[in-house]
Length: 476
Image 1 (cartoon, helix red, strand yellow):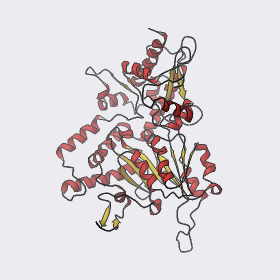
Image 2: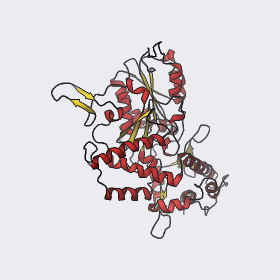
Image 3: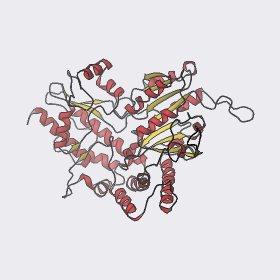
Image 4: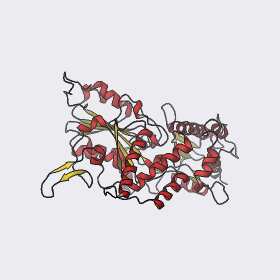
């Protein structure tokens, strides 16, 4: 076996042992502070971890009950529980879920399931329908786009997005530019100064992730609270709001990555964001095709009027005149057409399975944090025979990071090994990884030292994100 091949064997042996919670068969250069067994003893869901894995995730095992896949792509899409899928299948075979816009029993059943799912999800996210409206969308990207369309940005306003933002958040700059707003990419630490009254003009939007999907770096939830504190809503003697009722800055938080392994607890915030975006399959594994936009109730009266409307969103409309009357409740007003009612109904089983298996998101956070710390310590200790580090990890020092570890591997001479080769060998070893730039241009620019000129030059040469050109001129 070549030296590089031997190091791959060592790394993938470590990955397999970490998930299976067994001792690695080959020692790493320096033993990490905690072993996988110690991690499990502290955070193993009350001693049930192995039982949960075998019972709820049979897709990980072969016919002989041996682990066939080490699944490490939870940030892309986590695994669904078997009890969730079985319960959903049984329900679909014994019930007639029908279009909720009809009125027969199947339709009423679907309507009830949808509204009950709203309430259960709001409780899951630590809030209630009094403070937030939960609007179902096709996915997190659709929720982000809807939030951008609803924000009343003005021509003298600004759209700020941070360098850790997902491509879908960056994509809002097209909407902002169309409205005449200034588009301003920034670092998160710059926001404190940007949202000061003396630096604010017009109605503006700031959008950022509370966890970077590339590196796992986490960011505070307090931007909306700072905005309200700096732009207090004045109330006149009769109790009416005399300044328009909403600060000039609107706040959108992309919580899709964060919510997959940590509790939101929106009710604990002094002032929550105007918009919060989540994805169902990133939390529960299934269903796909369902996201949600949480809209702060106090912000609803100041939303930008809809331009497009679909079936189910209006009380009445004229065919031949520009007149329509929208439904009063914001959820029905914003959910154009028929929502994915079968998938939404299955969320009840997803929530049941999640609670039964893991107890709470707080426990999930403890478990994932412990494994992440063990993984980072272990991979930092992996070295070639000449002492050079095998892993270059992006982040996980200084700031707070969630359970996502972004890394590149290096050969014995210190050169980067392309992710295509890494993934090929990982597949051969039964390890499922996510490789590439993960639809996060700002984080890739920061951690991989990629400039805009680099990207323009690569594009002119015919390179594209997702192709096989993984190392160009020595750069990953």
